[in-house]
Length: 99
Picture 1 (cartoon, one colour):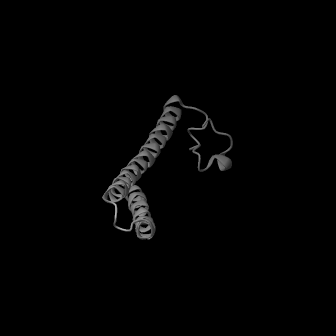
Picture 2 (cartoon, helix red, strand yellow):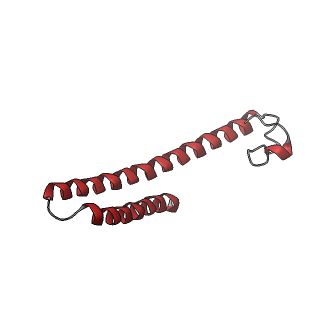
Picture 3 (spheres, rainbow, N blue to C red):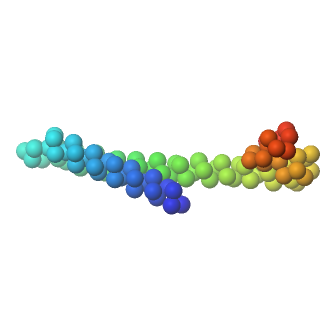
């Protein structure tokens, strides 16, 4: 879980740094509508960073579930590779795998 939290905070840090770097160049304090656009843009960037970190979490979760289901199926069906422990990590050492 810390990987996804670090993705969010790293992206937030980079976006705030870029906002302050480019904000000092473009915002001169004269137009309140322009500042509102920058504020809402920053809020949208934070929401998008949150969604990106959640999507990364869901992708990893789906991959883990899919892999565990395949391994469980192969061990339950008594496939020729299940007794060898044929996983992706040692597939080259143990010969061909069904995965």
